[in-house]
Length: 591
Image 1 (cartoon, rainbow, N blue to C red):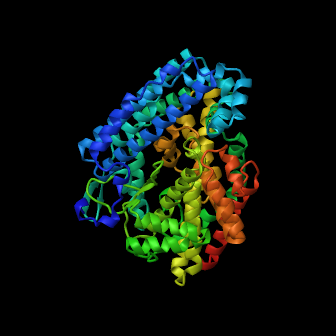
Image 2 (image 1 turned 120 degrees about the horizontal axis):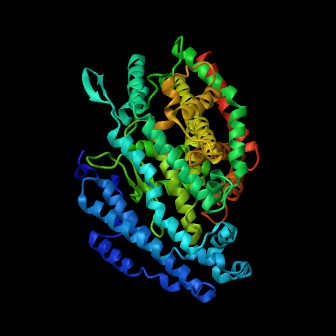
Image 3 (image 1 turned 180 degrees about the vertical axis):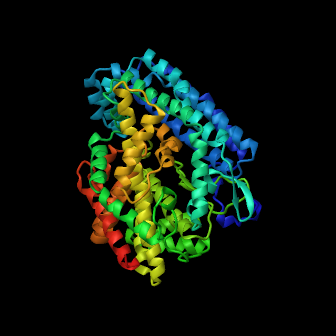
């Protein structure tokens, strides 16, 4: 489909950001001329000057966010248009200049008396920036000199190259072979591999699995060297900034208590037997003598799809989220009617889906909607992101409006869990109910269980280097295989291919990121169940969280919604939810 063929109500209204390209270009020139923040250096000990600096940088960032949003959304409408790709290049250069001009800020603030910084906390003129100042006080012992900070900044391009190298290997140089599908030879790709894994054709799944991993195994020495370099980079930076470990450094940056990470690993490890049981059930239902990892995604329930056009699907999402109240439903309909959403898949359009916030406007959502149940859940997911952004921006000043990545997947997953539970309750077709329960089990397996397994692997890999040990293809594969056996049990074959799976995970180049997917779904399961059992009180508490932005640390924000990740209770509740869902699924499947 061409973009010109899409009806207007299914296109996002980007003109709410800038009415045309000319206004974007004018705003970009204006903002570029405003980059002159070095004049504040050495003067932050004066309250008036500090306040001027904070307001000036805030004004820049609000304008810059609008520039980024417009350029990104226009580019993603059709990635073939050179003009909008050049816009992205222009804002990259602008941001680089801005970072260079403001590099003095944290080092200089760290040199100021703590009494001065504490005094700022009680000054109403700085109330918008109080959490930012609290973090500066907390970071004082980990801030290096301005000269050292500039050296780190100058080295960032080289130190950041490991992900770029992996991306080039993974997307450009990986020697993926051909595979025959429906009588036609096609080159195996990441997307095609994923589709085949969900196919009922077991022989084709096995063929794709072996061919896919053979490509990675052929480059395993190179990928190992690259990943080892990335871990050494993490160790270097954690020591530069005075942290005991890479994990401490990563969690400090997010203002998250280490107890959260420890609770996650402890709870999932202690409850692995339930996952082993699900794997055993899958083996029985597929009727195979040996279960392999290429059988993990194979469909267990066939002919259970529902097919709805976009507007029908959107209305089903609105109905399914009734537990969040009429105001929330009204906002969902507003997003639909006011064209926050770009719906159709068209030639050249970016694939996938996302939500993008624009302070002072509203969020925008990119979809490539297809009439499948998965895409119905995608609507719920992305609108969860969008309304989290909406509430945070409406209730917080700009300085506190952007919530941290740690909580970014909570609202989206709450929507998914509530919608799923609504559909299960409503389902009259037993086959559909089986499908939905299996969908929930697989979502928890992939988002909670698997990501925690990844989190344990990268924790142990970093620990090896911190203790002075090298990383080799042998010890990395041995480490990954050992953790895999613990998490998945003995009813699945742990072949050599799966021991190399670590080498194809791009998130490992953003160290200690994946655990946030696990804590996100754990939190969402707890919140959704509380809403369904406690009603209005739980909804009000949840809205406090949605409205919190980054007004305090993310673990404290989640406490507003009744979830305390510093305790074991929410982790164990989520694991119990998995077990209860499995029991219900087993009854329906007569296992």
